[in-house]
Amino acid sequence: MTPSSHSTPSALNGRDRGFWAGRWFSMRAALNGAQHTVRTQPNAWIEVFALIFVAVAALYFRVSALEWGVLAFTIFIVLALECVNTAVEAVVDLVSPTYHPVAAVAKDAAAGGLVFAVLGSLCVGAAIFGPRLWNLLA
Image 1: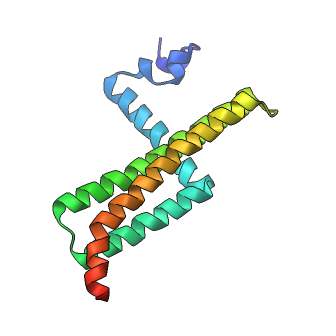
Image 2 (image 1 turned 180 degrees about the horizontal axis):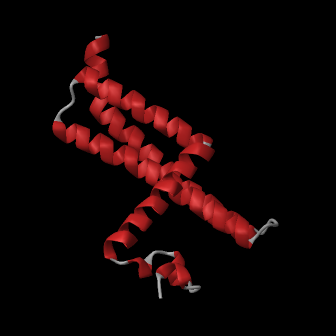
């Protein structure tokens, strides 16, 4: 039986496709999720703009390889949490189409996790760019 002839859920998620075909299936699904988040979430647009702004600033200030690594990790953690927040909101909306206080807690907690990441990213930016900006303005 071919994977397309299965009607089980595993046929739909790539498990019966073979190792490499399954990895490719999973990668495409993940990229679709990332694309959906960037396309539909206004906060993701701000985060992508921040990524571009930070990259330009890092090039201008010639940050070290270690600083590039910290900046990239920080930026992509924020974007990853934006995807997680989008997923939590979608699932909560699916299972609780009307207002429920517990559903609100789930959505608010997911957004709160993102707030922590953004605050952390601001700290990273201040640590890396603060002294350089101070020297530039002094």
